[in-house]
Length: 244
Image (cartoon, rainbow, N blue to C red; front, side):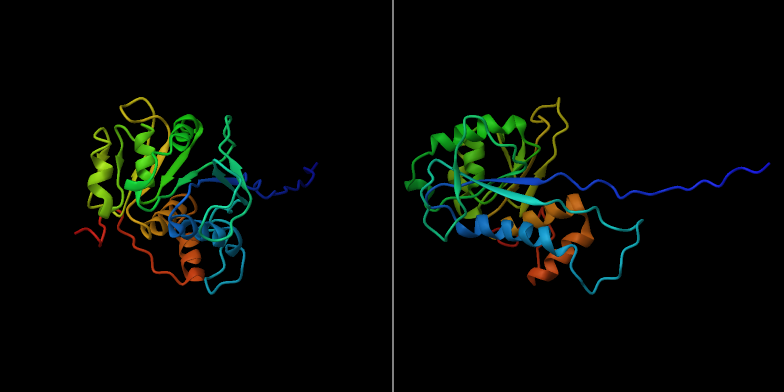
């Protein structure tokens, strides 16, 4: 008597859930703070399945699949903000959308602008539901005013350093960094389960986004996006070449 042959079938892993990005906008936002990091994600969303000059991957070496990406622009009005044409915006909601991560850019001339209380309250309310919060340039000032950076390491624009830092003494500011990652495990001081990524000024947000992509999808995927964009990213998060 012989055993009947058996067949095994392999199934592809389920696709990753959609990555929903929430971007907090306000009048006078710095364009590169928003569109630089978002273009990294834009290329990420379609380039990883395109033909490249990299060797073919095997099942054991393939990078994790990248998810479909949707974008929500969050603001206090549906009217266009000055810079370039934007997708339709969503007013700041009472019940925040299921967006993860959230990206908080900077504004020009913070000293002459209103403190943006609605945006600060929104950050405060949505923060406990986030897995990631990414701030670019003086966007960290909004997060600091919301109190969500207290007890955490963070950085911000070097040209506005004094004005940002003096208003947020509970934050562990890292002046020499290009970007800073505070990984929270929960329980300890400043650890609430949210991973906070903060960058220095303007173009540093692109370097931060590349580092964030690499931390999730790996060096191969991040490098592929870098080649598509023809961009040479700065890789030393703890050392900013623009520190005076």
